[in-house]
Structure formats: structure tokens, C-alpha cells
Image (cartoon, rainbow, N blue to C red; front, side, top):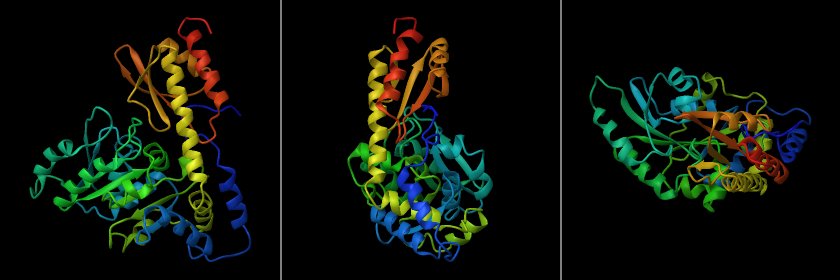
Length: 345
């Protein structure tokens, strides 16, 4: 089956994850996480975010975001995010449905929130007629492919904590950010003041599974009830834990993210050399480009990818590389650009 540039969700699972599932598929163990595979998976995640972190496995990213936020949000509260955030655009209202709270969005130029973006919304604090800001949610990597530095995360955490709020990070592409920044995951999560972390697995080689990590003491005390009532408690949790142990308990997570990032950098460079305008300085595994509609359609016949949003008469498109994207995949796609643009291949 051909590879595409539509999403890192489109890729298959890394062999290490599949081997881990097969090895875990031996005999009977206690259900709902009371098993050695889940213990190993929790240990692997804690090796990246700290031994005091409370770690809970869930099925998917939307489930991780919704249940994680539910742990700190109350009726009448709201969570503040960038307008492009996944919780605001691609989760079908699930955060609002499952938490009973509003998602307030802020337009940004690059998909990243900054304290100055959030501060005007804090005027609602203490006013009974308005939803109360209780959490700030950021995505790492942001939905535009941009990355928060540890210092940028810390600035938002400090602002949140100064106003009795929490900082949540949607880390669906956490591994790609760590590779791009050249730093440990803890440096821009636990050490930078993040309170609740959705720790990504599916986009980085797992068959399925994410982790909700509470990095501040006490926040996860009742989370097991949030997870169960939110429909995210896996009875055969060993299959999630085994994957995390195999991928994040070894160098596989880094190798997967590094491969995806390198292929995206190659794709961006090739597209630019072919005359395509590339946006937002791609550093992780996503490339956003501006294409004429005819060029876009020609290239979509070569490899599938998503249309992001119109810009004038052109379309911003998103190309995503995965752990299994190859040099040949990128070379073939880049080679098609001149012909699609009316030049020669």
C-alpha cells in the first residue's frame, strides 16, 4: 500500500509495538491495568516526565484531552486555547460535551499562545456572568507545525499559576518536539510547569494508546473515575502498556520521531527548491505549503494530503511525514511538483 502525506495517523504501527502486543498476548492477567505490562508502560512514561508523575493510559488523543481537562474543570469554567487547537477544531465539541465547560479560542499568527494572548481573557475572573478561566491548553507540536520552547511553556505556566489556573499540554506529537528541540521531554513539560499532559503514542509508532500524565501533585487523585466515566478505561490495558514500554522504554520513540522530522525537512527543502512557498518554518514532521488549486489537485493524485484553509485564491495544504516515510516517498513527491506547476519534471 502506498504511503501518503495526509497524517501520521495513516501510518502503520512500528514493528516494536506489534511485537510487544504479541508478547503481551500470553495467558491471563488481571484486567483494567492491574498487570505487569501496564506497570512497565507507566515506568517508561515516567522515565520521560518524572517519577512522581501520575500516569494513566487511555485509548486516543481526544479521550486523553477530555478526561485530563475534566480532572480540573468545573461547571462554569472554561479552557483557553489557540483558535487552531485540536480541542477547538477537530474534536467535534467533545471537550465541551464531556467537561461541561467552554473552550475559548484566541487567534494567533502561528498557532502558538503567548501570555499577551491570554491576559485579556482573565478579566472574566471572579465575574459571575462569565465562564471562569481555569486552564490554558497548548499543543506541542502546535497544529501549524510550530514548536514551543521550554521558556515559552514556562511563561504560560507562570501566568496560569499566578491566577489559580492550570496548564494543559496536548502532546500528540510530543516526541517530534523533543527531537526538534534536542532536549528531554521533561525539559518542556514537567520542568517548565505543565500540570496535565496528554502524552502521545499513536502518531509515533503505536497501534493505539495515549497517556494522561498529571505532573503536579494531587491533580490525578480522582482521575480513575474520570477515565471510567469518560469511556476511556481499557479492560485489556496490557496491550497499551506493552507498547509504551517497548517504544518509550527504548530508543524507538526517538528513532521514529527523528525519521519523521528528517523527512519533513527534506520535503520542505525540496518543495522550496521547486518554487513552492512553505509556511511557518517547519521544524517537526509537518509542512504547510501554499498552492494553486490546479497544482494541489495534481499533487493529490500523486500522494494524498489535507487541504488546510484557503488563502486568497490559493490553498494552504498540510503535508505530514511519519516514522515510516522514506527518502523515495519524498523524492517521488518533490519530483512531481514541476509538472504539476506546469514546468518539466
